[in-house]
Length: 192
Image (cartoon, rainbow, N blue to C red):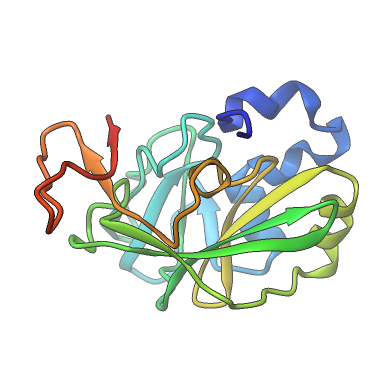
């Protein structure tokens, strides 16, 4: 069994030159996305995703879709806006720079960004862009999450849900939910 690990557990192990990867705004800017920090509004009004630049608590806490007006500075300090991507939400683990796991997340509520109803193993292969492949090569574990083919965040850890369970699918059970399997057993993982 592998150690349960979160982003905050890896902070002291990250090479200082690679810390930029944890800042979702800097990552988005380096990947060429239309995005900006608090104080810099988009040129075109519209719907954007607004997220904390850095979130070591994980699970997309604080992320939400917002209608932004180009002439109204409404982004809280420490947050940034980014264009919204469409497609499958996938997560890829790399061990010493080589992909070793791919999973896809599914949501029942497309606007609830901190909750997934299911994660399932998939056979997709994801090729990291050079700037991230170089980082992944320098660390034991590296993980990226994507929507479509766009990387939305990166981590210096593995997916501990699948590392610690011999399962093809994981169904989270949130504290306020109760889920029955077809056999009548309670399934999943109790999460906040």
